Length: 598
Image 1 (cartoon, rainbow, N blue to C red):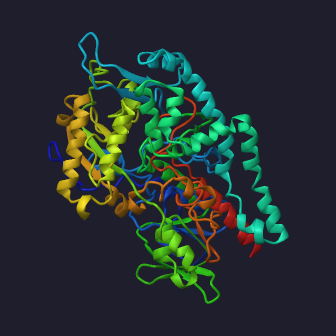
Image 2 (cartoon, rainbow, N blue to C red):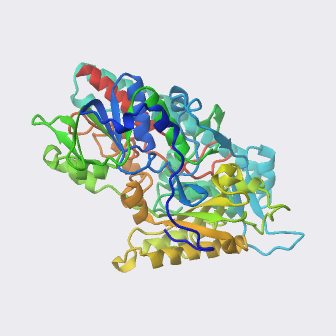
């Protein structure tokens, strides 16, 4: 962590006691020797899995190594008085069933919906009477077209058709998120009952095909082509194309010109909150408040959640079946099943006894692509950024564009590609792609009066620098200074407003949040690591070669977007932290079915 500006204390401060600790009747301090289920890691997927299992009558305990729950969906007071969503920072893709089933609103979840959603200022000459242009997009169709027509009238006319095209794709894909992928092994070698069950999982795929119909070849191209090629077929103006292209490369070590980059965009075109399709929001109190609400739902039904309890080993009996876990310090906790919210690499290469895993399986896990381009910077400022393209109003009150995802260095897809090329050579980008959010513009509880918290999601930064060099404090600060210089060009005075900052490189994201390689998805969202093949082929149904051990985190289907997702319905361009929860929910249902058959 590095501080700048006025030298405020950099000590990490805890937030007030969350609701889940107040309602669990002392379970946090009363560890039992045995449970029906143990969940490794209190990330949001692990908490969702625990909440569902406990509601189904499965006595469940969750063990979290950190002092705070939530994984990457966490709120931390890094600088006194400033509460940061330290990693994930926006909510949209949370599955509607989870929101309803777990009664998250009842358990304290409060949302601040955003509209408009996207702001892309131009770095060009302007005057007092005619400032630089910008692209502001939201839910108003006519206003969107007016904004786009600054750059291309043709694109303004095409944009609604593009949205309808993507909407249809979402309708086809959305059901695939809420169930395990088709069990190919069961279809080939299972019993009659297992084959019938596997056949039932084909229904979402068949339905998806019917929904796409004759346009299936065009949608196939979206999945496999470079996003630059897809967008070139729809639009001609670079500000619009580059704004949309950020969603295909965000969080991924890929260029807009990389084949298959369009697939990540696919995962960024769905979302619903409180019955509002396409809604995006900040969570009141930061993303940790979402995790607290899920935990409160779980503990209200009897689940036990333990912080600062590190699982050192998954215990396996002589017959190759899970029988519990061993905590750091040697304490044993027995259970019928174990669910891991940790990454596949940690789960299978560090926690599971290797003698019970096939060599080919271990090799595939060790070869997973976990490259990450992301450095997250959290900033405390004493005033709002003042963008030349949209000058602040008198009184420094937040305006519409301040609540948006603000895209900087994103006026041209060439800029994105050049930033990628820098990192490909082991260098931090000279002009990083920056996604800037100001959650305190809608939630003033996050910062002292007149001040704000700023979230900077930046790329591209390699995990290991050229020549095998590592990120030390000097290199981290040099990169952060470069990012701040870029922001200064769009919003003069930004650097003078900074009170303190927290810099998280890919190595920091790995160390603090357990994200392998700093990858926010636990592994690349490439076609060879999705659906049937997530985390590896033949093991995409949350089960693994050790009976009774399950994967329930972002490394399992359908992946999860703890830092990045967007919605199909205005905008198709929002970035920031969907927190889907589908992997946790799906895994819980698989585990419950297996427990009934034991």
